[in-house]
Image (tube, rainbow, N blue to C red; front, side, top):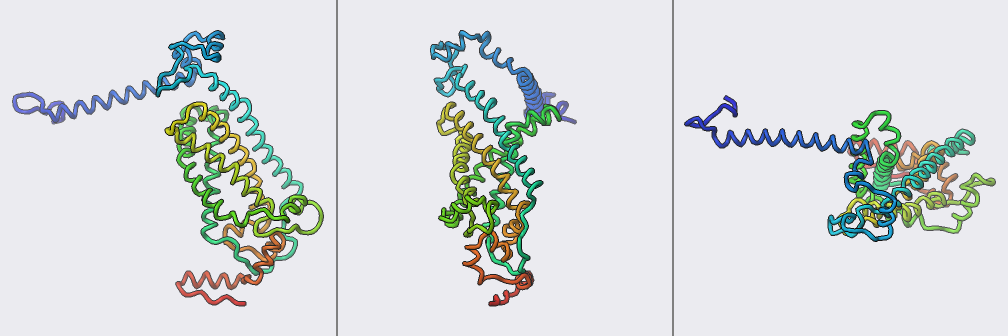
Amino acid sequence: MNQLTAQAPGGVPHLSQWQGVWRWLLLAFALVFSLGVAQVAHAQEADPNREMSTAAPGIDADQWRQVRSGETGPNYRDSRADSNYNLINASGETWRQWRNRWVSPFGLIVIGGMIGIIALFYLIVGRKHLEEPRTGRKLFRWPLFMRALHWSVASLFIVLALTGLNLLFGKFVFRGLFGDAFWGWMVSSSKLLHNYLGPIFSVLLIVMLVSLIKDNLPKKHDLEWFKKGGGLVGKGHVDAGFANGGEKAWYWLLASVGLLVVASGLVLDFPNFGQGRDTMQWANLVHAVGALGLTAVSVGHIYIGTLGTEGSLEGMTTGYVDETWAKEHHNLWYEEVKDQSVSEQELADRKASKDAGESPAPRSS
């Protein structure tokens, strides 16, 4: 017998059976209610004016002037959370105009322009190859900790950039291509990833900035590096220590604009610290402008560190760089560490010994 027909002595259903029936009824009610709410939300999303007409019907120019002047009555006040804001918020409309008319389109222009410039540069100039043959001797440049930290920060940055771009521009592309259902899943997933990965990125970025500050302090020869465009202007190599002028510029951009993006992102991520709507709106604009600018510059950083320059990626994947690369790109650092070079065969022997659990052989002089 099932729960509907099972009965206690005397033909009266037992209490436990009634509880089971009520659970099913409540579950069915919750399901029907959620579907109804979803349909209402979808209808309001399809018709943006519907929510406005329901909340405050008959809004006209005179009422907007009244709101902007502060002469509002109780019908145009939002009493939630003891708020003193107008239910019709003029500052919210200003934020929307700034975001939609200026920040979003110009951010797209900056990122698209950077991609176009790099593509044109690659087609005209091509990849920067080493001028001299490789020596086959390696210099240790990046320890495992820094490599792991770099790739963690870089991976999170890319995910945050892609999800942020999807939140800003995705509806103009994916919603029309795949429909509301797929777009709804995309935007909710992007928001979830962006909100939860942002604080992790913030902590790791600060750790990386602190770890690299010593090698990125400005030096006199960095000015000459910029004057010669990193070696593109004039003849001969430009002097550079462990970090050249361009790398230092990227570091301090992350240390200034990057931390500003982090701070504004935390304001948006944790709205339970008493910040008002005006603060959240300004934080959103600062976050968007800074993040779009960093994304554009990061495209150049990624190009130079991978496809654009021969030998650059090796340092961040293996930890070692060839002597020729060091002399051509970081000559001052090379002079400091050139006596520490090791052959490729010695590195291979060290790896084999480590894999076999043996003690590494002593380094040759």
